[in-house]
Length: 454
Picture (tube, rainbow, N blue to C red):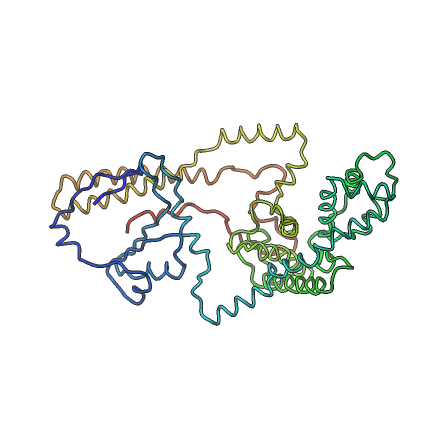
């Protein structure tokens, strides 16, 4: 046998005493979770890989009477002579398995999931985009050229900046604005002396400073009037789905929603309940379209480049949940403000307590290994080696307690929220009607039990 050390290397092969095998081991054969289902054994060992299903994980870790041990594969082994490959955290492997839906579903569940997918936001949004997008840009070009002279229209069609203007107008259309009215405003003034028609129109569009219509914009308002009939039907389906999601979450808020907006009080007014449902609908629509299933995650960490519809829904969800949009804040800063922000961040990092999570996991593993070595030595009637292993285990336990205290200080840093708004993931201020606020932390201390032997 060989044993893995704390630095990732392996010991030289060693023999297990025959007396230990005779008294503490028995011959058995490994099998998959389907074979083990329904069986009960004294101790169970499960090899956990990223391809394991959630149901198989439950079956494999509930077969043992005395103990159930998970051997988690965190990555591949580098070839000899190469640097070790980066490994995933055991907790992240288990979390990915728990978050992934099991493909082994009953026929009834498969039918229900298929029905939900057909009427879900993601599928409807894809169809709506396919119905609206092909005709939208040509319509934008035709409306703009209709307000230009023949020579200006000829130049406009050949300008490289034209797609940028089209994307900006499309973003305004997704926000619920009337594109025809906007085009009329930006083309009202003459274009005399303009070196780029598209650039001038883009600049005029920015000067309009279109107001933010908020999260109350419906898909019917986002759909152009001259869009195909199927686009209007899909828009109605998207609006119906959003209302259904909002009503469902208002009655039974999920953790990601409760951590941002709290939970409605039973005596909440109808106006407050309607506003809560609209905000929940805006965020739930985005989460369903983006395929976010983590109950603690409200939005994706970054924008959806190349998908303007989904990215617009993300910004709408940020506003509805009152989350600080760091990207928008940074984009609006001057160079001096950006430099000051960088200096402040460097000072904060210099004063921050160190992250001890990795050392904490390794120390906990070393403590568990030491206790196991002590038990093995007692089985082999070697009191001296058992005493040494026990002393090492106690030393590691003391070190683990120190690291846990250090990690607790790291979790509490920074002591105060950053200036300019609350931290992402923190609950919003209490509402005036006294509705309750139950928080669901978005992060927690790394679980060490997955690395400890029972």
